[in-house]
Structures are given as structure tokens and as C-alpha cells.
Image (cartoon, rainbow, N blue to C red; front, side, top):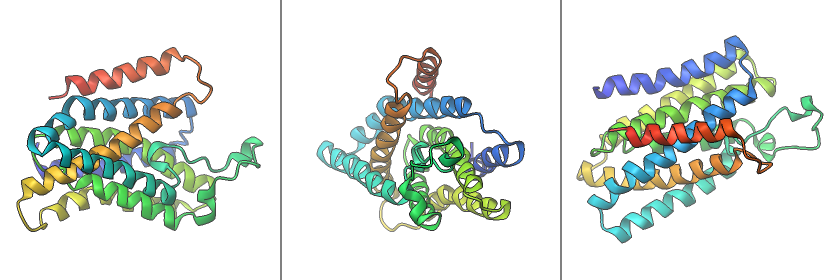
Length: 243
């Protein structure tokens, strides 16, 4: 698959996911949580089975570890701005469900700061997209990760009273960020392979934070859910079988 087609698919998948919520009224929370659980399991397994080995094979181990941890910390900071939308954790409009006392802090800075955090996150994911052998796996991981984000983003805008035009604008901006990161990486001076491995290590840390948060939050009541467990196994198996 050529690079242009990958970028088009990444852009189109976000738009399609957003349109699914925007124009069909898809608000099935159970379905969206299962999609989120699948994506969390997929990107965690992707890191463990494919991306970690790629980075540690090409980089000094200590440097790789530092960069991965830096990515983890970076996502912690981005969560403060985005409210955790990257892992589907933002809950807006809960007052409609008789939970008005739950006032998420993202509402106090919504939507501009939230969009800045989300866009930085998506841009960073695109930087190593065409670097090294991890490109195919990373592409699939971003694809599965961004679709549930598009669901959450549209739901947030709609439940906060934004117009369809404002919602579509935000969706398009988000959809452009990862392709933009991939394109910008081509203009970074120096050895593109070296830059790609450093950027990939950073993204692994971001993925690791997001995936573990998704899976830990998959069932806040700490009850065993067979459907979620099966979904997590399916996502892990899909990543394992990825070549």
C-alpha cells in the first residue's frame, strides 16, 4: 500500500466514524465501549509484539527506554489539555442522565484547549508512520485507535450544543493531524531512519499510556464481562497476526 493511500484511509476513517455518529445518531454506549476495548487491546499488543522489538533492535536500549517513557509522560500532559478524549474518558452531557454533579474539568476549557491536546496527540502519531518496518503495524494501530476517538469527539460536540458545522470542522481538523505529522516528518533534517526510530519510541510510550488506560477503564465496577474479555482477546490476536 502506497503512502498516499494510507494517508487517505486514515483521513477517511476518521470522517466516516464521525459521520456514523453525526448522521445516524449512533449512541450505543455498549457498542462504542467494545470498539474502544478492541482498539486498546490491539495497540497494546501491537506495542508488545511488533513495535517494542522494532525499536529495541534499532536503538540503544537505554535510549529507547528513555524515549518510550518520555512518550508516556507526554501523554499524561496531553491528557490534562484534552480531558482524556484519546482513550474515550471524557464524559460530557451527563446531566442529561441525572448526573449533573459530575462536572468534568474539560468543560471549563472546552473546546479549544481540548482540540489542541488532541491535535498534538494525533500529529505525534503520524511522525514515525513511514519510518522503518513498523510502518504497516503503526498504520493499522492508528487506524483502529482514531475511529473510536472520532465517535467520542462528535458525541462531545453534539452533547455540548455545538452545531453540525462546528462539529464537522473539528472532525476534519482532527482527521488531518496524523497525515500532517507523516508529511512533516519528511522535512526533518538528518537521517530519516534515525528520526523515525526516535519518534516511534515516543509514540510507543503514548500508545502504552492510552491502551492501558482504556483497558483499566473498560470496566469501572471491576466485574468480569465475557463480551469485553472476548473483544480484548480478539484485538490482541489481530495485532499478533499482523505482519
